[in-house]
Length: 303
Image (cartoon, rainbow, N blue to C red; front, side):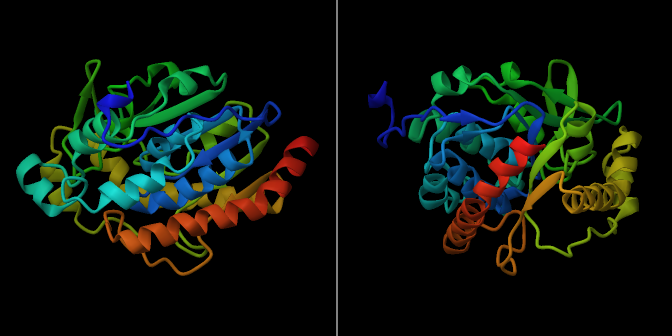
């Protein structure tokens, strides 16, 4: 198998302990800002720590694949060797392929030809993993479970299909887009599934509030066949700010630990492919998660 890859594959590492039932890892997306979360995940892998329930959307879900497969450093190598390639993310992609992120390159070429996912280790993990994608026709989030994630990565691509910057993704007769449209921080879904303690990984600094989408007329023209989609995008700032407030309230109550960038973000846009900035962001995520691991374990056991 290794001869198929240009790089030496990173073998997956089995976790040493799974946190108690009803402990959840909740993941925000954020495009390339999600490499902050990738650093957080590698700190968890290094500590041998796994969550029994993981829920994420967009880049949060995509980067979590390497965490579940126990492949420390895989996402960092993606930054080092592939994100700088215009095929990964660029305006050129948008012009020629109608998608800012090169879906074929990101989800097929990189994992199948360059730095593979350890699917054997991924499939061994007896955990719940939910990936959300937005159903453009019903206006609801569709949640795919771990068994729905295969090497084709269709469900993950659907979750990462950013509105206006990616075409609608057709899967199993559904018309799907970014899972962060209706559930940008899927804390409410995690609570409804019975979880009582949450580790929430955000990709924005404290104090951030999402603003309303400015181009309502253009949006309605572009998605005139999907009124529920346009309605949700126009309300997304309210949903995001509500879910963020809930996360912060749970943290005050001792029911959650939030991990998010403490330094002012240098990666301003979700499509930034500046390798130096992204590696710094990854390292920040790793170091900040490492500092919170003892508190996570202690609080999870008590809760």
